[in-house]
Length: 334
Ligand code: UDP
Ligand code: MG
Image (cartoon, rainbow, N blue to C red; front, side):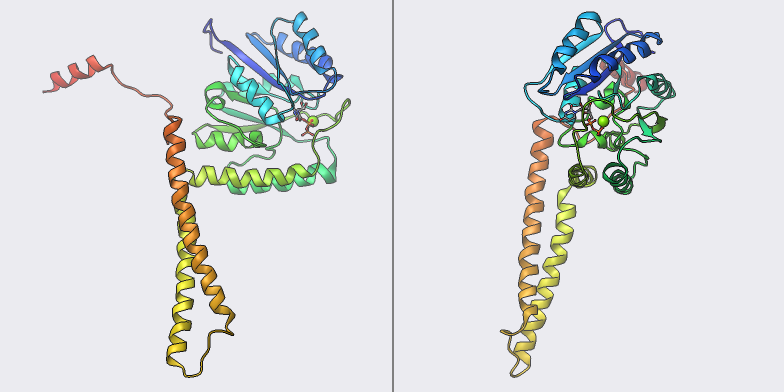
């Protein structure tokens, strides 16, 4: 574990939306788990615009435990945004996110930390015995897990489990949107992180209600398309639009040339009753538009990277002598 006096060893990030009954029990369990570990820590609860007494409960907890930080969002921004607020605030070298509804078990924190100590950058929880509704939650989530694995090439059993540990430098480099928190392992692996998973406990919800239904699966699939695009083509969008655009354009042109030639060469051959001509026109227009979109996207990508000073690569460390050393080095070499 690191021993920098200005840094903490561990930050817990816990989004809370209408979890008033869970808050005190959760905190007690977290405190017990952390007390057993020899490290400096903070526990960041993010109140995501709850309409019940969650905030009051968190304030009480804050008064009794000085490791506790409470971030109160102005309205309900959603779980990913709430987690993001916590990640931005966190000062720990290692950041662990978990749900605030007691479905994750704070006793697993030690296991996650041990795995990080083995040299991994992201350790994801795998709810081997998931305690949720079979039809509405477990089956859609299995399909989503399979799809995410295929598309992102990061093989995990359970992307949806919030209980995950991250090295701070990895998570702080990832910007989250939409329902993206489940794609953090994929996004992290894109920036070169070593990702793994370990089995964790999962309990049924006792108090409060789950905030999501089946509709989340659809949003997850849409986010998956975004993630795939970001991971594969975000620095060269014309490659994807251009290939399909050219294909459509050439196919359409071919059809049109063929039909026009036929009309010119075959006496009595009319184009008015040939639907394939329409198809040809459609493909040409579509192709031209896709190439246009690809070019616009190329402009966007440049604006995105350059306006935010975002390089297209991620450096882990650089071994270099300081400038004076380097000049000296050159002089002695001559
Ligand atoms: N949550 C949140 N904002 C929301 C919805 C949920 O902060 O808009 C929190 C919620 O309090 C819980 C976690 O996100 O701590 C997971 O929510 P939930 O238990 O409803 O999801 P599930 O476990 O069913 O995936
Ligand atoms: Mg839950």
